[in-house]
Length: 102
Image 1 (cartoon, rainbow, N blue to C red):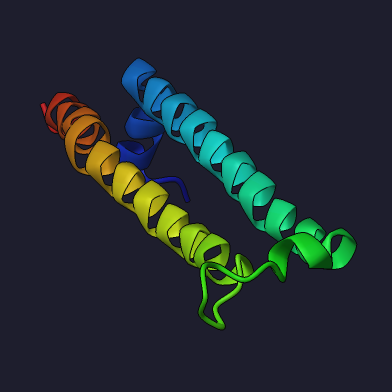
Image 2: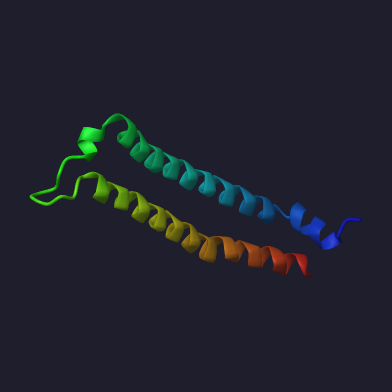
Protein backbone atom coordinates (compact mmCIF):
# COMPACT_ATOMS: atom_id res chain seq x y z
CA UNK A 1 0.00 0.00 0.00
CA UNK A 2 2.17 2.76 -1.31
CA UNK A 3 0.95 6.32 -1.62
CA UNK A 4 1.58 7.64 -5.15
CA UNK A 5 2.35 11.15 -3.89
CA UNK A 6 4.99 9.80 -1.52
CA UNK A 7 6.51 7.82 -4.38
CA UNK A 8 6.57 10.94 -6.58
CA UNK A 9 8.29 12.92 -3.83
CA UNK A 10 10.87 10.23 -3.13
CA UNK A 11 11.68 9.89 -6.84
CA UNK A 12 11.93 13.64 -7.44
CA UNK A 13 15.54 14.77 -8.16
CA UNK A 14 15.20 17.85 -5.97
CA UNK A 15 14.17 15.62 -3.06
CA UNK A 16 17.49 13.80 -3.35
CA UNK A 17 19.25 17.17 -3.53
CA UNK A 18 17.39 18.34 -0.41
CA UNK A 19 18.28 15.19 1.50
CA UNK A 20 21.92 15.40 0.48
CA UNK A 21 22.32 19.08 1.37
CA UNK A 22 20.51 18.74 4.68
CA UNK A 23 22.42 15.62 5.73
CA UNK A 24 25.85 16.99 4.76
CA UNK A 25 25.26 20.28 6.55
CA UNK A 26 23.82 18.53 9.59
CA UNK A 27 26.84 16.26 9.85
CA UNK A 28 29.20 19.22 9.49
CA UNK A 29 27.52 21.04 12.37
CA UNK A 30 27.43 17.84 14.42
CA UNK A 31 31.17 17.30 13.96
CA UNK A 32 31.91 20.92 14.88
CA UNK A 33 29.79 20.57 18.01
CA UNK A 34 31.57 17.35 19.00
CA UNK A 35 34.96 19.03 18.56
CA UNK A 36 33.99 22.04 20.68
CA UNK A 37 32.20 20.07 23.40
CA UNK A 38 34.69 17.24 23.73
CA UNK A 39 37.56 19.70 23.43
CA UNK A 40 36.20 21.46 26.50
CA UNK A 41 35.67 18.16 28.33
CA UNK A 42 39.21 17.16 27.34
CA UNK A 43 40.54 20.38 28.88
CA UNK A 44 38.66 19.61 32.06
CA UNK A 45 40.07 16.09 32.16
CA UNK A 46 43.65 16.73 31.12
CA UNK A 47 44.50 20.38 31.82
CA UNK A 48 42.70 21.51 34.97
CA UNK A 49 45.40 24.03 35.89
CA UNK A 50 44.81 25.89 32.62
CA UNK A 51 41.07 26.17 33.25
CA UNK A 52 41.64 26.99 36.91
CA UNK A 53 43.66 30.13 36.19
CA UNK A 54 41.95 33.14 37.75
CA UNK A 55 40.90 36.01 35.54
CA UNK A 56 42.17 39.29 36.94
CA UNK A 57 41.79 39.83 40.67
CA UNK A 58 38.43 38.06 40.99
CA UNK A 59 37.52 34.50 41.78
CA UNK A 60 36.31 33.63 38.30
CA UNK A 61 38.53 31.13 36.53
CA UNK A 62 39.28 30.80 32.83
CA UNK A 63 37.01 27.74 32.62
CA UNK A 64 33.85 29.81 33.15
CA UNK A 65 34.09 31.99 30.00
CA UNK A 66 35.26 29.03 27.94
CA UNK A 67 32.24 27.03 29.14
CA UNK A 68 29.98 29.95 28.30
CA UNK A 69 31.63 30.01 24.88
CA UNK A 70 30.60 26.38 24.36
CA UNK A 71 27.00 27.30 25.18
CA UNK A 72 27.10 30.35 22.88
CA UNK A 73 28.61 28.23 20.10
CA UNK A 74 25.70 25.81 20.45
CA UNK A 75 23.20 28.66 20.15
CA UNK A 76 25.10 30.06 17.16
CA UNK A 77 25.16 26.83 15.15
CA UNK A 78 21.49 26.24 15.96
CA UNK A 79 20.71 29.69 14.55
CA UNK A 80 22.80 28.98 11.47
CA UNK A 81 20.93 25.73 10.86
CA UNK A 82 17.51 27.35 11.39
CA UNK A 83 18.44 30.17 9.00
CA UNK A 84 19.46 27.72 6.30
CA UNK A 85 16.41 25.54 6.90
CA UNK A 86 14.05 28.51 6.65
CA UNK A 87 15.60 29.78 3.44
CA UNK A 88 17.22 27.09 1.32
CA UNK A 89 15.54 23.90 2.57
CA UNK A 90 12.03 25.36 2.73
CA UNK A 91 12.40 26.74 -0.81
CA UNK A 92 13.44 23.32 -2.12
CA UNK A 93 10.55 21.69 -0.25
CA UNK A 94 8.09 24.15 -1.77
CA UNK A 95 9.46 23.46 -5.27
CA UNK A 96 9.13 19.71 -4.75
CA UNK A 97 5.56 19.99 -3.49
CA UNK A 98 4.63 22.28 -6.39
CA UNK A 99 6.05 19.86 -8.95
CA UNK A 100 4.44 16.82 -7.34
CA UNK A 101 1.00 18.38 -7.00
CA UNK A 102 0.74 18.96 -10.77
